[in-house]
Length: 150
Picture 1 (spheres, rainbow, N blue to C red):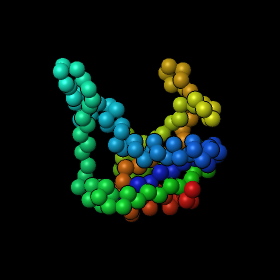
Picture 2: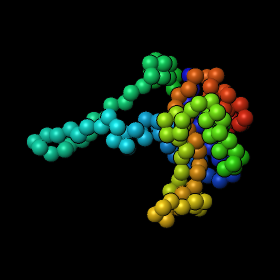
Picture 3: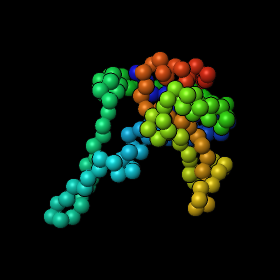
Picture 4: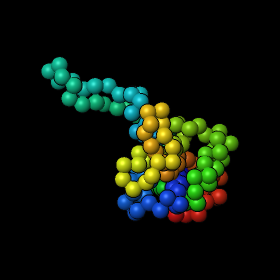
């Protein structure tokens, strides 16, 4: 079992920016449900919220083979935005679902990247990576075989 992350090479991100974007891609399968409020409950003390408790549900294999195993990750490079989106297409053809099995990571363009697109509020962003939840090796290879290691 491994987690696959594919990052764009054409953006020529600095090593720090690339690392940050890959970290976002790696954590998205855990943090997106929490950010949506799924399985989150407040912790109160003396009637005041002092923190939050988040419950994360994982498949047995993901826990046993990845969390309790080696945390294997494969980082591949995409030549450009279109090649990165091909990974999305391959994933969907394999039955994987966006925002559950894989996540498109967009930078908010506050530092070194220029916006490629804008949201409904006019905020600029640039697609940098696609990150997958931990997958069986054969599934990860079906996606990654079209890409070179970064």
